[in-house]
Length: 541
Image (cartoon, helix red, strand yellow):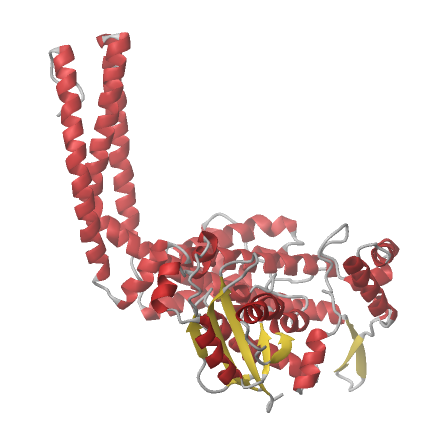
């Protein structure tokens, strides 16, 4: 594999419905597992509209492509020179090559470029089975394996991410399996295969090899193999064929470790290999989750700090605007009540207004207090907070003792305190817990901790699944954070510290314009009340 030359490619398109036009084409020459030389990257202008749903994903519009894109024939001529007849690989080869590029070349009257290689997605599915990240989406794997952040949903960014994934994650797994040549890897990626974990039906989530000890599940696989649906039948037959070539799952050889005793005799000790593996996976998952939570919290806190800075700068403007909005609302309510029910009923609006105004003032005081607490930690403080949090979660997370229900209240309370200290950047609190956890709990009126760690296999399986689910949920939440406008402002402000003040000035000008209109409306309502009642506005000036 180290000497094989091939091309890694990706496209961004006008969507999934034919005819599909490529709007961005990127590729990277590969030598074995590593990129070789500069990438290929071009935008294509087909003089066609881009559906809004596609533009929202890749950011390309007809105007952008007319400005920055090149004629397709020129792009593909250059691409053919870059490829030079080498095999093409993509993370979804069936789409990029078979559904996009080949139909487009035929439509343009262009001879096929390169030759078909293997699908990198298919390779990842097999090597990562069962996938620890929960799914094989490229950005999910990038986050899970901490690969460099590239341009998501751009062809060039995705090519770079696949190259990272191939080199850092898939290569070691392939070499462990003895897949050392291009031919071996291609055969492995294209061979018939289905996930080890059933993805649907009554046995969803279970590993198919459990059917060796479960007659009901085995019968279900036989039923699947006899399905009239070709794909389902192929899957069922594949599972049954794998089972027929496997040793009984329950007869997995025991691992025996020899331990020397004091009289130099050897004592044979049974070790359950699945139990040992699960414990190692759980330990790694805990560390991974703790690292992700610490990194997510660091970025989330950074976003909050920027938003707090904006709030502090804009608070007087916000308060003035909201006070006017509130006054307008209650002056309208006063007028509506006056016209229908008379002055006596209208007077009852005044205490409601005073209460609402007082509550608004309290809300602003609370928001100001929270903003004052949101300070950016120094680099050393961030490093210490992350280290303390990782250590404490690894030691005291309640899922370590899920089988000891009598201790759950203690552990739940402790982890809540740890998470709260992390969220608000309270390093002193984390130090206090780390230095003397039992003393901390006693001071809170709770008992001390017992650090035994024995659980049955079924509990460990459930625990591992729970940890994986929490990792995936956190990754999804992190992705949502990074897609927000608040996060974009946070990242830009790290490069340009003056940006927060510039944004505040812009927003202050916008709010001031809004305040001008609100003041005019409030004054008009006050005059109307005075004309109807012959008295000053009861809600004040």
